[in-house]
Amino acid sequence: MCQASDAMKRHWEIDVLRGLMLVLMTVTHLPTRFTDPLGQPFGWVSAAEGFVLLSAFMAGLVYSRYARRDGVDAMRSAFFRRALKIYLCHAALLLFLLTAITAVGVRVDQPAVKNLVSFYLAQPFEGFFYGLLLIYEPALLDILPMYIFFMLLSPWVLAWGMRRGWTGILVLSFALWVLAQFGFTEWLYGWTFALTGMPVPYPEMGAFNTCAWQFLWFAGLWLGAGRSAPGARPLRFAWPVTAAAVAIALAGLVWRHFGEHGQAPFGADVQLNLLVDKWLLGPLRLLDLAALGVVVIRFGPAWVRWLPRVRWLETMGRASLPAFCVHLVAVLTVLAFFGDSQTARSWTEDSALLVTVLAAMYAVARFTQGADAAPPEETVDLPDAPARGA
Image (cartoon, rainbow, N blue to C red; front, side, top):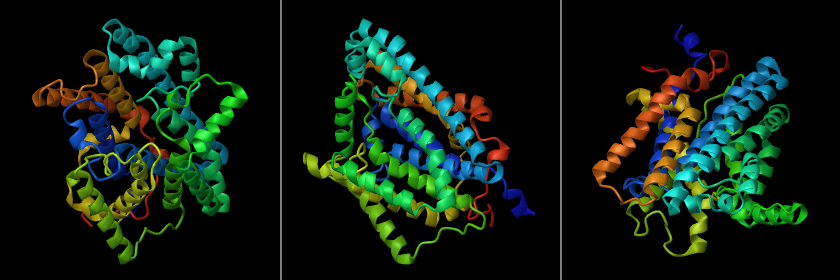
């Protein structure tokens, strides 16, 4: 009876993790005294990597079930509906930035805002037009366009993987990640600029290197689709792999928090820091993320049985899109009125600010969770999900 009741449910463990990633992103983006000490808390991995990987995993989990139950066309339509919802949210955030926030920033002569929208201030029409086309991506508003792009590609990739296997997809995706480490994305931009004369400079097209980050997305999509496959077995790792993952994760954690250079592991050495570069998804960062993933998969079921269920994180993870939008509205508002200084306020004031923003995110998530969460018929079974109390 317990197995039957658990067979079709929304997995709250994933929602809690996504909620945690939202909290960490808020701490990182909101300019407070908490930003530096709590940034990248687990090693050379940020909340963005965790959020993208978990989102891809859930997409593979949910939409592969759509394809098996209702066919590929229904799966494709579901992907496109979700992509449209995300696009509308991004367009609203962009308009908020280019109107209200920009007006305040210009009026009070706020450098943090004027630097954020410098291209738009110089070329308003082009900034607005290419912003709606997801080409111009001001800082902080660059993760949703990348997410939309991946969502639009995913139906074709997922259908191919389910029919013909994932080996070719993952090999090509990894090869593109390797090319991105050697400047392929910049070359692609130069070629496109020469062909079209597009006026948006490369640095204004978002900080995330899409050719690198696509590997993280499609790896997550593969993992999710595999977990929902009929007869899927729990993921298992040999003890040497687990031991190596624990060692790498611990090394990254200690290096991040007790190293002499803080979030720049190699100090002023720009070339070596590229190995852990966030925007390029450098190789050491990817290795650290993989190690943390193995640790979570190996020890997560035990943690789930013993740790308390954090309902407010679960709620934010379930309605992650509205919560994410609220966090960006809050961050942009703070930048407009207070600038980007992390030390302008006391610890007490920053604590109150952070709690207020998180409370607003939770309130909106709770209000919208029914609309944003997957409906019951879209939830899927994780064959290796532990039963509480087992």
